[in-house]
Image (tube, rainbow, N blue to C red; front, side):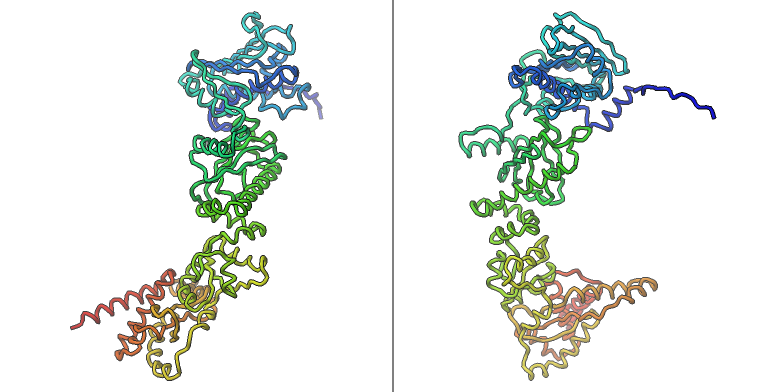
Length: 603
């Protein structure tokens, strides 16, 4: 075998292909070029301040001039020497932040100079950088000019063309592009850089427009708490588009987070994609962050600044790592503390909040016993005693019965209320879990699942003589309802206005659904369904003998008409329970209706 000596080669970079990758795959829009230019300018100023303690970034000014075809941005930053131009601007991925002199202060910088400047090729055909170093006053002024075909030149220019230390970047727009229009540049510079600690202005050659407004509103001093609240409300309305119901201050030192959470003034679905506004070292990172707060906190929209969380490669969202998870939990804790504080100190505002966002609070209280204990007097549940809180309800009713669905609750609520049985509707989101948590807070409270037997046991039986007199009627009624798997019994109960009550449980409903599916299935599937048949108790139609209509129906001599009347009572009880109708139920209702029409229209 002949061995050959390995030779070293350098990757060749296709700049056009790289620009296409940046504009179509890494960045969501070419508009990020403004962010990259501002990042480079602010980072250059930060680097100069690290080298010169007397240089104050807050006193500096970054000027942007745009006329539609060209854009020029000038900063008084650290500048570049000839060697740094070759090292940083002509090397893909090069960055002045790697300089050993400032390596320890990386968290002070916003981005990477090399890749950020290349992003400008998404809107420009020519980029020119003219720079004078602040660290080496004897260094010449250097000009680097690059085209989007991958070629560039480096020249030294007279000091008179750039007498002060710093850098000027000039862009020449691609043909047909309008990204360098003055108004567009102003809007983008304000969007990305309004909180930057360096003064930034944009002009078209005339009067400059200042786009920065630092420090952030939530960090400023205000004459009164009310004045601060009004200022934050105005900010929320102008930036996020809604007047907040309330404002929650956020401060997470471990993640370098400061900001505010605005409470939405309207109800929103927990599945709605949130849109939080995140600044990284005062530069806007994204206004659509959806992983900043816990899922249960869907009723807030946050605006924050952080200097520690990690951005993705495109710098348009947060990297979902352990640091973000810790920050998310901390933000959730502060929102939880705000709710608890309202419960203790400001019940009027709490009630206004719960009127809109009770679902979110219930979601949180499921996993937080302390919050659940604090909020129970304020959370409302649908019960047989009306919409009330569980604390008062549990004092009045023992045990507390839990209906597993809205249909089950509606089926028994009027009767249970008349009989003095305490039932809570557990069919709404999170309500069943919260009711079941009651015994953990108070061991004296007993919670039981509602069964049909609970209601039927509370109904008064008719006397023996009456039951014997009704025997033939009941037998005929049972025969008519046997096709829908329903038994018929007679009891006496309140309210008198309810003629009949349909009682069943989930097992019997599932068995009826299985039987219906079996009847409609082919032989193979029908055999499978038959193999899982259960011997569940049948549903019961309980006729109220105190109701005058029921007593008159029981006295009808015509068996056919009496049977039709019983079918009608079943249909009315079924509709009152708000349950889905099976095909057999629909057929029975149609038949009883037509039979009644035929009877009343007979000559």
